[in-house]
Length: 262
Image 1 (cartoon, rainbow, N blue to C red):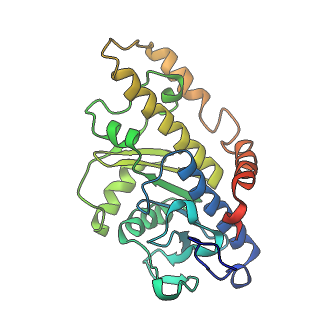
Image 2: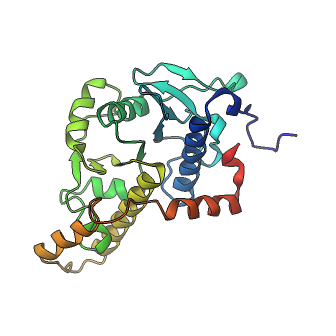
């Protein structure tokens, strides 16, 4: 029997490979975690994951569902041209995808084949920092991880594929990007890695807004220390992010509500 307020979406498990199903479970978990940690914007924004063993396909949310109700079966598979390859039966709701999400995410997946997951948020903290001329300041250890973060100038709602080239150029080979007057974007070789980057970027933005709100001079750190700290967070220096955290985060979700696995 369907619970009140819960969409009755048929399982997609028998319609995809085991590798794709695992990707669906991880992606659904990421949506739930972004909501849980206060980074969601109702049904706006998107998180996507590359479909394993398929060069031209990624999974993304159905436009019309809240992050807190995303499940493995509710995700839609699309190609880099925005064509829907598979989706569940949403009944009369007939959900599709949001074009702005497709334009941003398809650009990254096509240009960065090593990237498995792309996360874009409109959290209050990242939007606030994105509107500051100074950008993200390296005033905390967490923010120093983003010492060399990129910036992408606002060009309007991202509906035109013509913006993809400048977006990719501004992202470069980094893991994070501030979208000026807009929000934030992170990528990762795994879902767990991308979430780790976004979680830390969110904390850095919140800390900066909090510190700047105190209306007192900010304590500066020497450039040599900034560079050394930044280097400590780089892939060649430490283990990949998310390796330890992701299994623990999944256990956390399982204790709260394991329905993301459906």
